[in-house]
Image (cartoon, rainbow, N blue to C red; front, top):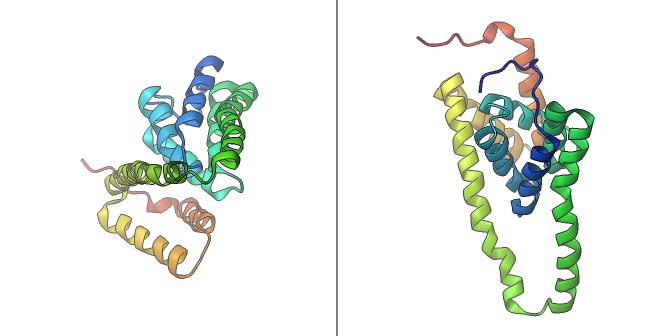
Length: 193
């Protein structure tokens, strides 16, 4: 689906609710594990946004305070359904978590000494790891395609050093990249033939 960023998108409130309810139900592990699910729903399943727009939403969402699991649905809901869409999407994504959290806390308090309950959480970690690896690979492919592999690799290494070696917050790194892109409009890469 090709559309400009200023074009008004629209989705029914029902579609928004069920989309983000699925994300809330299946997004085990918090915000980072929900990102690939949101991408699957809004880019691949519904075609409301393309990969580049989704990457922009993710980048901007990561620079703002608060959990990404509510920022992305809030913005996407607003873009697709106005203020009501924003409220609808955020409620849909948090409702399963609220209900499941209450039920799990009651069960955990009662049965915490049973081994298989303790092992349940550990069993999901590899699945979340695979989902994050797939999302990383998708973003790497898009970055290589638009910037070239040398620039992309340089940005990965620089970001890694800033975040993991120097301890700079990821939001600051993303904000610096956004500021650099905004302040250097002449650095746009021309499309290859």
